[in-house]
Length: 325
Image (cartoon, rainbow, N blue to C red):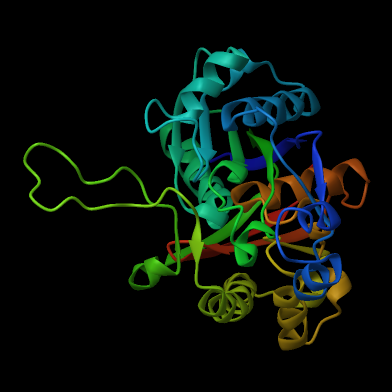
């Protein structure tokens, strides 16, 4: 049976950049307060680009890098918790924009772990359904869901999208993956939907469309699951950290990554970080980082890379990759 490799990567970030100093003009905070607690200096914020647009731009770049036509894409998976609308899926809108007329398209919702989940889903479908090429996209427009009066959350997030083209190959690419959920902790991070309201509801349920987060609980969850996820994929493949060239974590907080490095007894330099520029872009953070590393020529054919994510749900997981291009 053919293997599945990453054949191309792409990213998109809005041109509008909001620095910590600019945030301090609209909310009580400072560059020092934000940077010392998160490692974030700035974030890209949409000035009208919706999730589907950002996803499509990242997809176009990935297709160009892979030298594959959109018409040859069999599957589009978009990981997002900030879709353009409830229905249709953002993936179907992307399909229309890029002209991938021969593909099946759908979204998955696993928040910051979404890209990890998307790779696993796409690889499984490619192997079971005979698809030859797939697009997996992580895209978020978090600025429309952030409460800009809540300094504990609004300083953290940014907008953007990252994409990869997966293709069948004789070479090994996506080696293995691990995905898990802890649904009993779902209240730790929420963006609620429509109110429960109809002529038949006696007591209307009021919901909030703004992101809410229990930061302390999420931090504790992240610092344990990032270490456990990395160890699991290493153990399952009889590898150790010396065999790994890079770890690309979800870009949530520098402190989380520093903690993980110490717990794993490895230099933090093994972790690629760009949170200083982008902030937390949820499902987009890992593919944006991957695309950036490829452009900088930091990763080469034969490198072994671990992608690791964690987020709302609560969800987490990791993917072990042999870089094949």
